Amino acid sequence: MTDDMQQLPETCEQCGSANLRKDIVRSAFWHNDRLVVVEDIPALVCENCHEQFYDDATVVLIDLMRGDGFPPEAAQSELSVPVFSLQQRAKGMSQP
Figure 1 (spheres, one colour):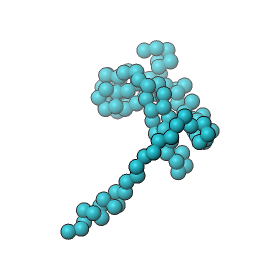
Figure 2 (tube, one colour):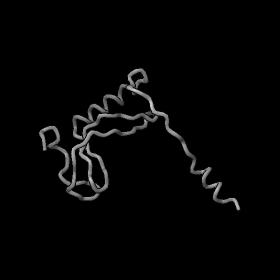
Figure 3 (cartoon, one colour):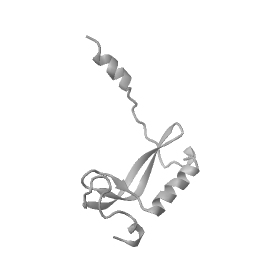
Figure 4 (cartoon, one colour):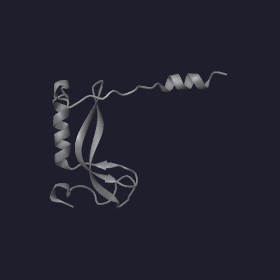
């Protein structure tokens, strides 16, 4: 592993697999009542369970973005996501 990823695990802390690969990922975070997506995150990804691990420098950068409040004017782009209701689904199943 390179110096910037030395503090990352050599095996997956979730499933124990040693099959980790370097990748660039995106991840979603809740900020207050907004869901935001951060792209271009360097990570180690478990090939078995897909758990993602970030090095300390990456975590600091994400925390700085969070501290800035993810201002809308700084966003690269926007995504539209559908929202589903589990309660609505449950109501549909209880009808004859």
